[in-house]
Image 1 (cartoon, rainbow, N blue to C red):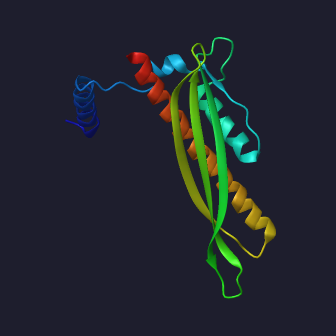
Image 2 (image 1 turned 45 degrees about the horizontal axis):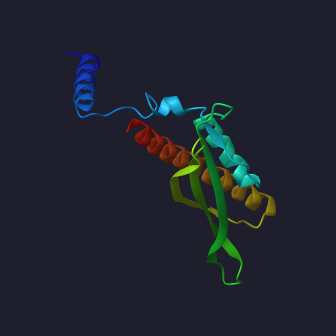
Length: 164
């Protein structure tokens, strides 16, 4: 038996075992039905703009047939981590906390409230340009991760509540 057919057989056995336990892909049904049915609240600021791009990509753009409204407010803090002897900071920690609320539009019922936190760090150099570039890259990375976590949490919760 070749290694390719052995892998195929193992994959088939794994899929059979997983399907027997009730596993269902998140975007297959339920979650897929929600894509484009979640209206996104307003954002302000550069990091919120990055976050909204991720949420739009993952959840779609809600319209007239939206079932839910997703409101996200973020709190961003930058903290000094490492100081040199001359009190200059050489490493920063960038932390974003998102307060998430999902409201069912037809009943105005709050179906989900959560707080999600993501952090990353970056080096500060003697070059202001390099330091700002590092900060912006971390800002985008944190927004991307935050958006992925928020969308996964929202889809999982709404899929669960719509299945019952």
